[in-house]
Image 1 (tube, helix red, strand yellow):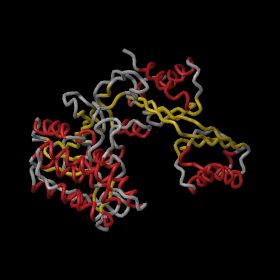
Image 2: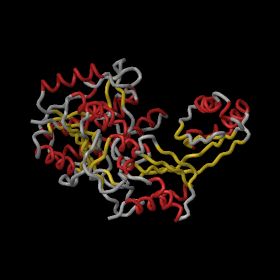
Image 3: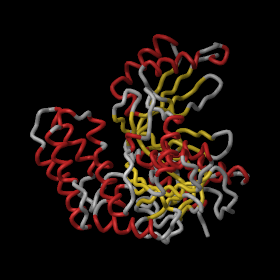
Image 4: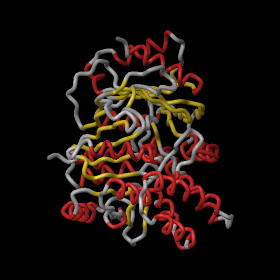
Length: 437
């Protein structure tokens, strides 16, 4: 018998009808023995996620505002699921105790309760034991995973239980306090379990049937991606293609465990398989396209810069002082551009420019803002001569001006910068150029 770790996202556990779909999925395959759940998500477009409500409750507490109405919404959601499924879990008592003792909860512990209560309900519904992540996932002081302790605890739970339900999103820090991951961190929890428990597959169930080659809000009816490598996924996720938390890749990449993205609402769809390498023939030379706005470029020119040792390093150290991450550094003999997030620079931009002028005295210093970055990604691109030229020709025909070009040494990704107003048009042009039947 193989082992599948299954993780169900917020939309998959948003209400009682979704719980029923989860049970059908688990019962359909005896290999699905260990289940990770998120907090209940949105039931409809203008609904609230439970985790958002918990953060809102924390804000009310912090600013000494009455949070009873927010708590009522949280409590009603959980009780509605319990009552519709005919469960007996004494969740009402626990919820009331939480609100009564609200001041004693840290923010981390409070916002983790969505997963905690959801897992308790799911455990009873499936007839599985509940295992609390706080007792199993151990984190170091820097919030990294304490793999030795976590692996030992998970393997002990495997020996104790043939099945269990496990809350995502949190663990326990080195000082024995609840610590949450970043938002969407339930994906990370599933990945940790897949690594530590030696899973054959990590199934991640959500509300879409895997990855698409482009954002369907930009490209009508984009093709599905049936297979993708970890490195391709990282490139696309970084540029905003969000089906899976990008940090969830690392634990399973270490053990070469495939991730299978599947749709709770359409469980028979093929989905997307993510793994270290894929020998599945690719129909198209690219795997996907993703882009996002919100960048600016700092252009630095200095005559004979190439003869001045450490010039670029001095400029980069200024940005480091202001905690600004570098996206790309296109360069020439006597010039280079630094592409950064506009939001990260914020109000410090002119202060940064002043420091550059004062410390390295460039002959020219120029800002180009309102840049969108677009990545065209695909491991097959390195085997197709002229890919970059074909991309630039297609954009040139449509009079798209390119501000920046970057290509990684593995030729898996070509990233370009364009004016933000051209973002969607550029993605459509690239898609139409390379994705043709």
